[in-house]
Image 1: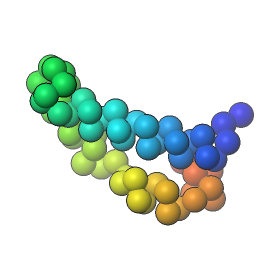
Image 2: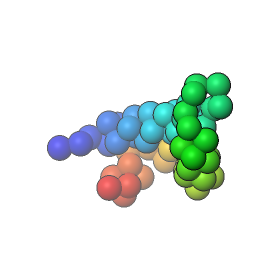
Image 3: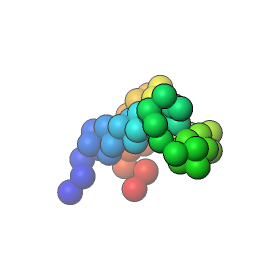
Image 4: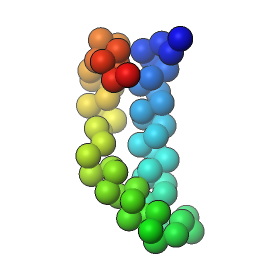
Length: 61
């Protein structure tokens, strides 16, 4: 069973990964950079994820 703090951590880690993939300096293919940027456009910010706390993390299943 995934705990709320684990779900929150996974979302924060996913956002970090997408930002790294979007960076042209890391060597990701251009297509992957565009896709990461497109996904991040609609992804919640770290502040939004953290500020909602465990009750919101349960809703993000």
